[in-house]
Image (cartoon, rainbow, N blue to C red; front, side, top):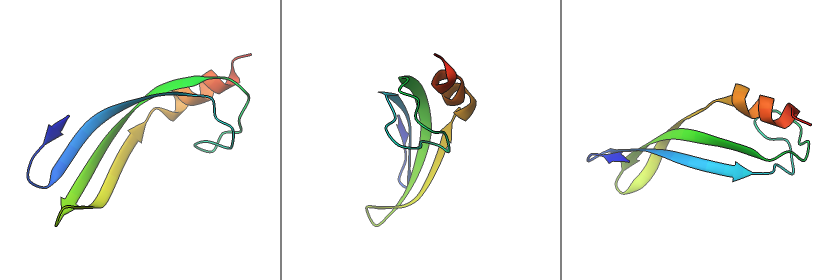
Length: 66
């Protein structure tokens, strides 16, 4: 995690089994794991903007596994 007076940047790791459409992909019952790189901009101690980066191709490949 990196921070300054306006921004927080962090890497979040998820392991889950989607039950509903996720990132535009239908659930298949397969477990997926992925990292999300996310950046938050704060103003007056509130989040006012969020930027997120997820490798959706990796998620798609995991959901396609039998």
